[in-house]
Length: 197
Image 1 (cartoon, rainbow, N blue to C red):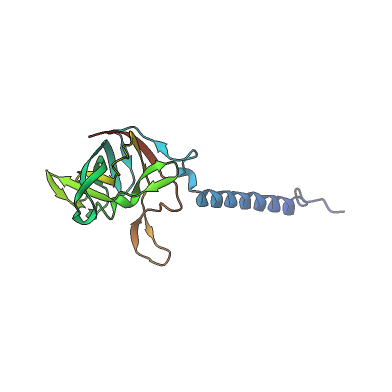
Image 2 (tube, helix red, strand yellow):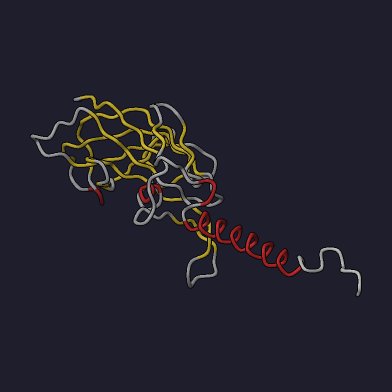
């Protein structure tokens, strides 16, 4: 009778156990990737205080104040009673971006939990002059504007912010900045007291 090889009967069993553990690890990583990875916030968006910087990756914004006043609507329409949120914006990308078509994509008012309303207009100010663009690395002041009816005088406003990602599209191999407000939760929220005038 031959001497048994040490561990000879155990080898196939160990191989299957190792493969099962490896498969479980791969599955766990895949699930983490689908739900947002290790970077995902476990309890939803973080609440930030007024005056703190929020890094959206493409932009860094700092909220300053909120008030009710007269402001222009989109496309230079007549002024009307509006809710105006003032903030400072820095463009972190390498290209000049638009306040109304770019910045506004990643920001929305939240009149009630889970309900989001994009600003009607965004006006920027650089060195005392009105601007629609944000140069890379050069901060500007901006106003997010929502029209108000005469009977609507909110005491506060909550603003939700989403993160931007620099990635390729499903069918587009070019890298571009994208923000997904439809299928992702906001990264941060800020609530500002609204001054009546």
